[in-house]
Length: 238
Image 1 (cartoon, one colour):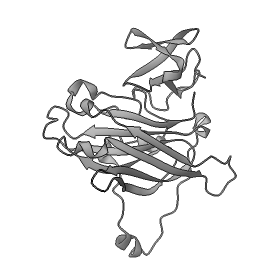
Image 2 (image 1 turned 120 degrees about the vertical axis):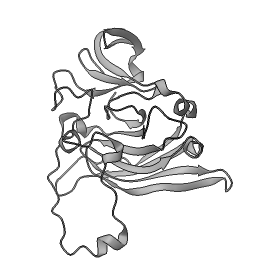
Image 3 (image 1 turned 30 degrees about the horizontal axis):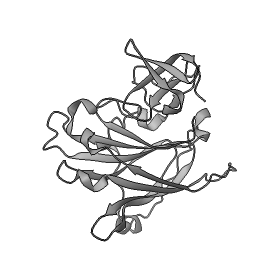
Image 4 (image 1 turned 135 degrees about the vertical axis):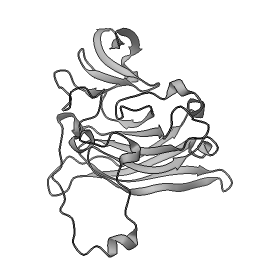
């Protein structure tokens, strides 16, 4: 449960801030000098009280050193290697140690949509990414609805490391309707160490597509300091 001093983001809309007071089931969240009342069950904690972001000046960035050191944009995320290119690699790259956070034992997953040009939404490509805000590796699939077949088809299947963002696909306003309904499925685990077992994730989400046609809906958020739309998929932090 969120408490006074926690930095939170809203589940049902964009934005967030720091909780200044709690009255019953209502939390008062301050952002940019303005205080917004919101139900406690409609916020998720992204930075517990008493914790500070590793990098000063970054607006509500999540706690991941490699991300803070340069991955400021979905467009900057490293492209995924093809199966053929992986086969030709002669030297395996050593895995870097996982940077864990105190609150990362509770899994939070979100979709992030970042336009390449927020000032020209009608022509800009919109890059979609998945954020794994936890200390767990996730082997996952993101499915989208195939209305003609009346079934689901994969948008992306793969692994995302702890506290990392992975690019899924790119859209425009002309085909953004393909992701109106998504299903996220995942298994959580750690490598080379013991961990608490998590139940498999299976989440359905209907996305409000009207936001992708409104410039004011794209704004810096929890995971990016550039204009974007962040959509929570799952969170254990309540």
